[in-house]
Length: 233
Length: 233
Image (cartoon, rainbow over all chains, first blue to last red; front, side, top):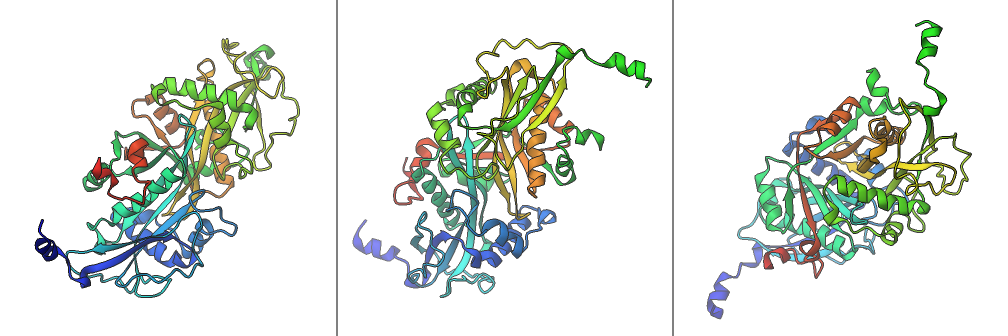
């Protein structure tokens, strides 16, 4: 390609954004809750939604939390029209250095929710998505892995490679930590997601089924280890 | 029922065993490895088996391990023809008191593997099964749960309620810890397992699919956070 042709393909500066993936801290809880709500809407599961800012803070950011990726871990994806300032250091984890990139867009993106999702770290940055993962274990491999419970990008910002960035961040971290694998569930009807994961090099395995005990059926096992509690219902 | 009728239903003492579920410690590693091998055989996955005693010890019983149920946790099921002695205390966890029961059997059980699976805690006890679980997280509930990676009873001891005891121990613990749910995968073809779980009060949900990155496809994400690494293969 001639340099003239290459130049004609360059995007104007106004269609670039900077992306940053960093570990979440407790200041991110209001945004995390709104993102989980949107995800519940997408998956038609709002009937199960009961997360509050208090319960998210207590369970995701307890005092004396283990380092990231050794327990429940949230990574936040932020976008900024200007380069990110040096981090204020307050939420930075020595186990995960923020991943910053410049992203060229084909056209400016209209984000009607930008104000609702302002970054708590200031500047003009907005939170565009998140991933929630935690350590899993493969006994066959005798190795830990990472299980991705949630991966979500807000509607305005989809189809621009941001989901790929989030999954890559987790996969890269698992590889660096010497883990055996990264796994997640894919809704069977979500062909876009299946295609996306396969393009990223993942296997999408045929379905096991999920067993689940919750609510009263689980509580029934609490008293004196009644292993036959369920039979009595 | 008259007391005479009740007496006639009592089993002779020789067909009773004592069962104990306790947290595993590093002395259990050789038995754990053999149990995982048998499970791999049952699931036709021996091609993936690469667990060694060293790798199991390092990943399941690291120095400074968190308390049970806050990280990877193995519970061991033991059987003994005589009541269990008081624990030697060495492997006991304050977070999980051993669950001891007397189990009446319809007939004595022939266990050809008894010698291979002697309990490291001595006596005449044998290890009959195990469960491996770790904390999971539901963002909709903003609550931790427990995910059961493995639940296994050796062939000689199946169909006697022991799997039920193991699952009950995990479900009871999750309930006591205020967790939201217990989940596990069920192989689609294993109708015995599906029936067993449903009888215990669990839902067996329709299949999501499992996405998995492992091996070279995962390692490809390690270098400089190449989110497009998979494309280059």
